[in-house]
Length: 211
Ligand code: SAH
Image (cartoon, rainbow, N blue to C red; front, side, top):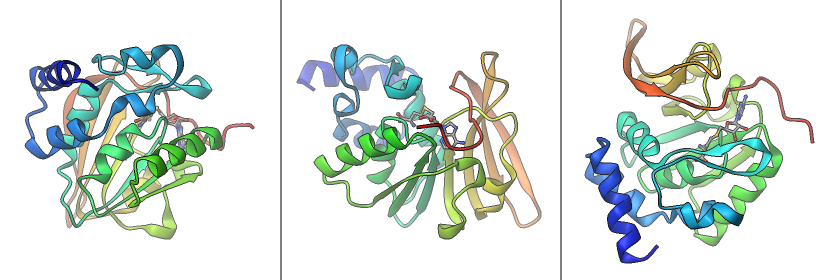
C-alpha cells in the first residue's frame, strides 16, 4: 500500500464513521492487499467488498472498521470470529486482542487465511475449519464474539459462549434482504440489543461446506 493509497483508505474509514484510534491504527498496519488475490488485488484499498474463493466475499473496509469499533476490544480479550473468509477481519482483531479464534465452514478459506497469518507473523490467531453456528465450546467463554455472516437470529450456542459483560456483533436478517448490524451485550440477567446500521453480508449457513 503506497502513501496515497493509505491516505485515501484511512480517509474513507473516517468519513464512514470509524473514529476509534486503535481500530484505525490496526487497519493502517494490516495490508488488505495481502488478503485479496487475482484480478481484484488492485482494488484492495477501495472501500468496497470484493470476491474471494468459495463464492464468498471480503467485507468492505469501512464495515470491518465499524464492526471492530462496536466490539470495543481490549488487549486482554479473547475474541471469537465466525466467518474467517479471507482472514482480513481476524488479522485486524489480532492487533487489538490477546487471542483470536476464527472459524469458517470452508476448509480451503481457512487454509488460505492461515498462510497469510503465517506470512505476516500474526501468531495469536487460531484458525479452524468448523461450523460456527455451534460456536467454539472448547475455548468458551469469550470476551467478544464477531459474526461476519448474516444470521436470522443471533445463534443460541454463541450467545451462551459470551461472558457476562461481553459483547457480540452480528448482522441479523434474511439473506438478500436488508440486514441490520446488532450489538448484543450480555448482562447479569440477560442480553441487551442495540441496532447499529444496515449492512449486507453473505448468509451464515449451517454445517461444513462440501469439499
Ligand atoms: N470476515 C471475512 C469475511 C466473511 S464472509 C473477511 O474478513 O474476509 C462470510 C464467511 O462466513 C464466509 O467465508 C463463509 O464461508 C462463512 N460462514 C458462513 N456460514 C458459516 C458457518 N456456519 N460457520 C463458519 N463459517 C461460516
